Structure formats: structure tokens, C-alpha cells
Image (tube, rainbow, N blue to C red; front, side):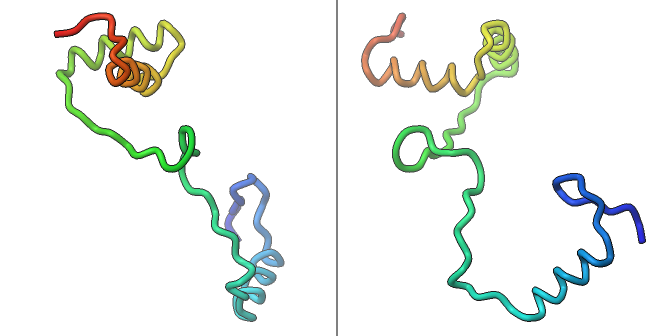
Length: 94
């Protein structure tokens, strides 16, 4: 058998495969399943929808470089600026 490894980097053995197969063939009780969180946790209460918008390549590169120098993510910078815009506390208005 090939050197298969689990997501926890454990070597998968024939015994493990046999055990998992037997469990699957026996069937699962759907009431025992717990929903699994997929993706990143929400920001605040409720859901956190994704917002996409287009910018010139040069602006994106500059923004990413500045955010990296400041130890921030571009998402954190964009969220902060959007909060300032909505609250009316923007540094400059056009």
C-alpha cells in the first residue's frame, strides 16, 4: 500500500481503512451529525458577506505594500476605511 497520510499527518494503515469502511457500511445516524463551520468565522454578529470591487493594478500593489509594512491585512484596511466612510469620519472627501 502507498504511504498515505491523514490530515493530521498520521500514516493510514489497512486496519484504519477497514475500520472506516465497516463503519460506513453499517450506516450513520443523521441525528448525530453536527454542522461543521466552513470558512472564516463571522465578523461581529450574524454573517459577514464578502464585498468585491475593482481597482487599478497599481493602486492594489501600493495598498498591499503599505498594509504589509504596517502589519495589517488589506481586508482590515478596507473594513476600517468603509467604517470611517459610513460614520462620516473620513480623512478626505472627494
